[in-house]
Length: 626
Image (cartoon, rainbow, N blue to C red):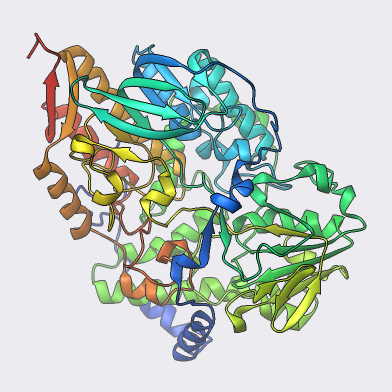
């Protein structure tokens, strides 16, 4: 097993160390069976049909009159009464998705006990508490994705676990590390204010709580706030509506495995065809009297190939197996010539994407990357033709863009759903999306489709502004707002802390590393923050603040080494990776990240810890120990 943070495919400064691939470009060119310029032009035309001038502004926040799409909790509709809390704690964790749970677990392992977790939902789990729509499962294999498997002694039952099992694992973490003991559920932090005289943060909540905390760890998660399409007439519809992250089984019947029996006499519309829709549309198609799928951009749909965990596989696992497997996954995406332990459609796509890393000449690398992606996407489009019987429908389901312009999709039943006589695909690319909502249905391409129910599968506030993503007003030194400072982009040290906001630490996607496997990003962050807080405790430190020059240097490093290609993203179909077709204008989680990979990032943090000086942090001890 590799050492913590060891770089497999890239050196410290991002230089490729994998073997050269002389001849691959030439052999790829020689074997082409398509016209490159014609395909490029096809991609451009398809992109242009989908770009909207509003960019990210085409979506509506789930606040005000739309708050019910987020505030409604179908799993715990009753708020449990309690008295307001007036207390002081050493550490306050906001959010109990993977970010909060992993932070709590690592702090407990480091010996901290005075921890309070505040969570909006009625239990732990974050997005896996809310997302229980039919067919919901992880798209990164469970053995890599579910955190703290070794620590909790659990082996997932399937290669890609379904939502109920993932939610139960979140609860398992909570029980194992005794995080329930001081957790507060059904509670939303409404304001955070730094009190310099006390060297504490004051957190107020919607339940009248006042919690003063020495340190605040904020883990809102990238998929914590649903977003809605700003379609004219949105409020006019008189039928039933809900967002997929608040699935209403009371209306549909069934459960995560389907059996939506209450829809047998219902006409249903679903708006959106991203990763969530791939999973729930087959069940809607099987249950509804008629299903109308409104698509602006088709997803890539590769083979899923889920299977139960082999008991013999579990017996072979040795201590350290999960970290090794996670690092193997990350290495594949950076061109490492190693055995693929995960060996699925996701890593197969990663090998295609990363093959160009082995080309030393940037122009040849870019050319090879494009050609290999063209061939890969041609294969996916051929799969659509094989699976969908109606050639006209198949043509509409073909994705015309680079595979990693959007998060890759995988499913074994999605495409075949469009062979059902009760399923109708409505492609809206020619009109840039659904035109309007009426009292009785959905209008697209000039045609009204009467329906009884509209399901919004329109994603989350992943790449919109920081204030929309975090939602909590945060006032640092002198009352300055975090969102004023991060108006254009995040500035920080290592992605977790920013000058002017002492003792506040952000856990999630930002100026840290980026990966398709979110939990491996968190693992490095929370291990690092647990170290910093342990050092603060040992030194009697009560105030930690990033030095301005340190965050400036880190921000410049992120920009200097950025792998975010603005021109390539401009050529991509709109999505949250490129701020809905306007790269550079929004807050893309990819654009702001440290882009040399998780392994390089963890290696950098490990070297920082080994130096022992806590460089870049201004540490102030409590009075009397300064």
